[in-house]
Length: 67
Image 1 (cartoon, rainbow, N blue to C red):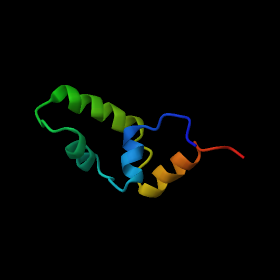
Image 2: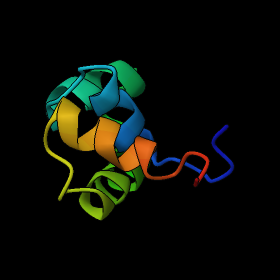
Image 3: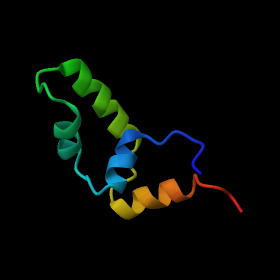
C-alpha cells in the first residue's frame, strides 16, 4: 500500500505517458490557459529527474511498504 502522495508527472510516466507535451495535452484542455500551463510546468520541473517509465516505477516502488 502506498501511503505517500505521488506527483502527477511520475504517475503518468509510470503509465508510459513520458513526454511533457504529451502530459500537457492530456491534462490541459485549453491551450491558452496560461495559469494551468504554469502550474503543470512547475509540477513537471519538480520531477524532471524522472524521465522514463522505469524511473517512475522505481520511484513508486520505493514508496510502498518497507520490509
